[in-house]
Picture 1: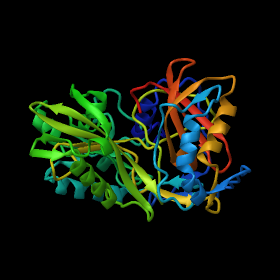
Picture 2: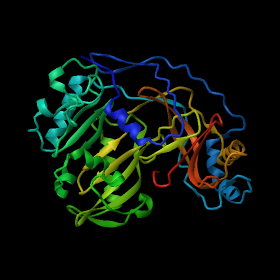
Picture 3: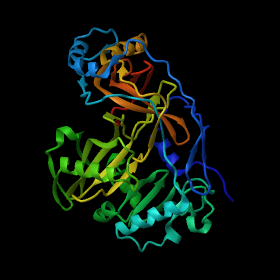
Length: 427
């Protein structure tokens, strides 16, 4: 009997957000799925925005950025300090917009075909799909008497009576994959498990160094831009962090299997080097960039939300243990579509104006020592499998009121503020 329940993908997302301090209410209206194709049918979204006064042309923001940085570092706000802050480059941004983000959806046969092609690519074409291909989307009730992944129903026992192919998965000690609405959400080609000779199921490879599922020891972490030339010995020989990051960028821009939409590229900002027995591996965090503006990104971990916005930054971890390819990954899918909700704008709040907005907003609440400032796109949940993506100045630093880290977003078009606190090691 079919039964709608929480999907494994949604469960993973909730686990990543454990520790929320308040109930986040989500509007889940506005999305239906075609039972034949699995494609998402979007209802019209009536969106409007009150624009802030005093906005500045982006080209002027760019030309005065360095002088604004100096002014902010010397500023004397009562509750916000920029003395030890890193301001990331503004880049060649020409305009910004507000977008609905969504996945096109995936059909049953389409999903099965992707899984088969992927198994062929990694040399596991002999995997018995009738036994191993399972559905964790919640379209059918799971069997609590069995261990994962066999508590989830066999796809072929219920084929073709699924609404979509989202949530189809394989998890063996040779490889693991799970399908999302826009392609592959998570996978391991089994190379990490094989090298470690753990005998465990391969899905742990995609969550390894950051969650410690294989008891990896992280040697160091940092920005790829600062560690670009560092060379470590991977399983197949020495490889620089920069070369591995470039390979990761190319890998995801090529598509998994669907490539990003026009204007979307992949950025690899952060790396962790971890031990792999007598060798090392790289764990990268990646994010999207749209027309020159990077998306905000984060790590797995608990957060406490203080605003009505359910902020959903890019969260994706990628594991590399050899020169040639990605060994495992888990997270957002680059094929997400972005639909304009307003005319794209060339006037925004400057960095200094946004800092003043933030100071006024936080007055009497908290004191913030800002450590990083960047112009980003901030995705906020709107409905099931849909997001509204806002252009924002991101301010991140230590909240000295409660000794927690804080992220605050000031919308560069409206002046709205969204913020939350988090554990120092999750970003």
